[in-house]
Amino acid sequence: MKIAIIGATGFVGSAILNELADRKHEITAIARTPKDSTNAAWVAADIFNTEALAEILKGHDTVINAYNPGWTNPNIYDNFLAGSKAIQEAVKKSGVKRFITIGGAGSLFVAPDLQAVDTPDFPKEIYPGANAARHYLNIIKEEKDLDWAFFSPAFEMHAGTTTGRTGKYRLGLENPVFNDEQRSILSVEDLAVVIADETENPKHHQVRFTAGY
Image (tube, rainbow, N blue to C red; front, side, top):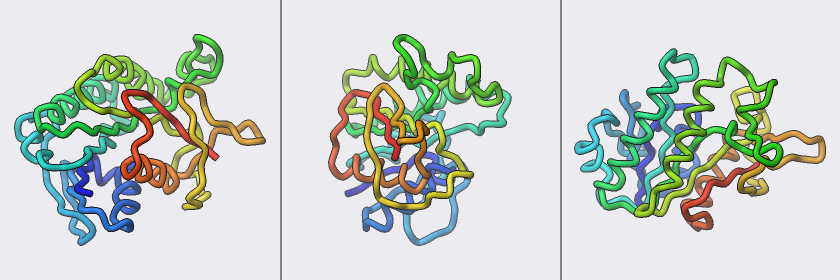
């Protein structure tokens, strides 16, 4: 398959890139500052230039969006929303139909009508980014032309999650996937497995989904 990855230098994007490269897919890795590697065709792009980005995306089977303006960015809320909407528009202009976007775990429901981001113990330092991802989920739910899927990671999906690549996971939709210890956990390597599996064998169409062990 010919796959474009936006945000390919990031924590999540680079893991997805490595997994898909290991599966021998043809990858266009898109970033503001491309890397020098042999596992993808690297392209520099400004995501806010939708016309130019659309030209780069043309001809791909799937676009994977792992864009994140940075958790320490003081403007993360506005940047995340504006960037995500610009990428969505570029995908539509490109003619590519399949679009997988990585959002946040904060929009998962932990009780009826209660999203994690609205609970008292939700970490304040990541609230702006999580809130932006929650609001973007509401935006993309209105998208009728693209065959989109929005992926919410497990709550414990960060650099401190050292499970590595197991190739095992369980899927969910609106609620976190908890293990026997009531932990919602997934390594970034297995997140990449989830996204690669979804890319190769699409199961989620115009819905949000999640995964955990």
